[in-house]
Length: 349
Image (cartoon, rainbow, N blue to C red; front, side, top):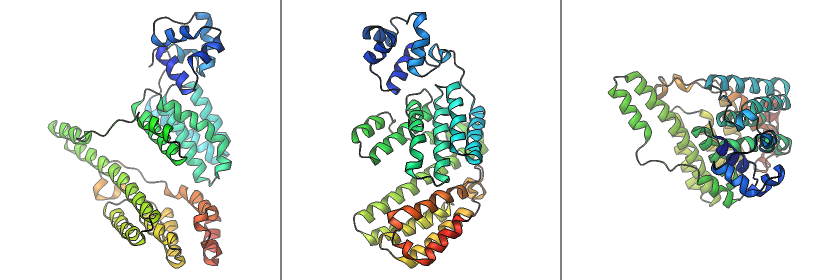
């Protein structure tokens, strides 16, 4: 739990306020705020309610008394938000999420989870960027607060996401600022030491599960790298290299038991670039069918001890179909009657 001076500094930064602006809101001097943040002095007790309001937190959090929920409790809250958004609409999910965020305003893991859960629900529902905009403003605030929080995993995940989005909109300065918060990868991977420790203790089953989880995570990273390389070759007008990488990605997905959807997506990318309608139709059909087929990576040999659950890929259908209906990349396909019929078929589902 953060001390009061750390909380004041972290929340002020998260809200984008200067010390002078916070001081003006409270009727004190900027040097007074500076002393609070340094821990050299403390706010007068009569200022605490106004200070908490200015920072968007409650008094318990300001004074370091707030309880941090356990992981199981966070999971239950995220499940409730997801279920509410799915059954009653995104506004219902957002309302419940706000209540949880107000109860635990400094829990980075919860804030990141709430934002990611609602964002995922909006994508799965096929909402457009315009439809998502009002909710996205709140989600960005939660991501920013998670990036400033104590929870290391949530802080790094939020900083990575915000850096990626800054790059996407061309804000190089913001991307660099977020990337500076990310730790550099160690020369020796941590998982190797942790596995060695488990083996030294004689915990062979746990060691195997640990390696399998590390393999699954790195396989996911590698397939994203391959997709990025395919797109880079397409952008550089190197169709043969793009197709060769797509073939490699498909083999990689099959070899390491990753989601079949990724293998079909890899093949679709160069087909879209060369506007090959028959190839695009074949790969799109395969992609959509793959999303409807249960995927259980934990049933595969490389991950059978990792305790992996079943992927919820079917929920992605709505967002993917909406993208095909609206994206310029698919405009030439929308002239094809078979393509329109295929989208209509999946929209009906």
